[in-house]
Length: 122
Image 1 (cartoon, rainbow, N blue to C red):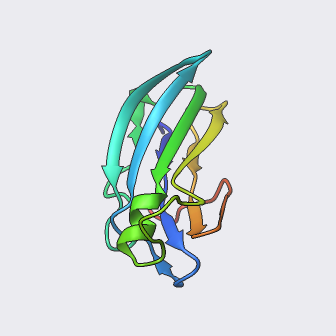
Image 2 (cartoon, helix red, strand yellow):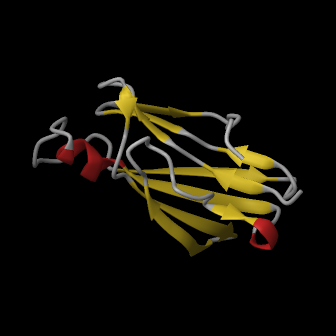
């Protein structure tokens, strides 16, 4: 089975999935970042497909960048001024390209957390 990378975003302040969050995925090599995918979360706060899967998913270092600021403004949780949280980068390593890596983001206007989770969906 080929590995894959999935994610989802939950709005912990409102207690619901965060729909409409733009997410970019980068492959990181040394000081180089190469964008390899971009998507937006659906009404369930999930992506419609894995961020990366199959032969393109290789061992290495990746970075997900979540555009939380735009979501927080659109949801009425932030004003027009400087945001405490705007773009949230999460850099992580993939040692086993045959495994499933699920990297969710839990956000509020002043905090975020992540973990390596298990996604119940294939």
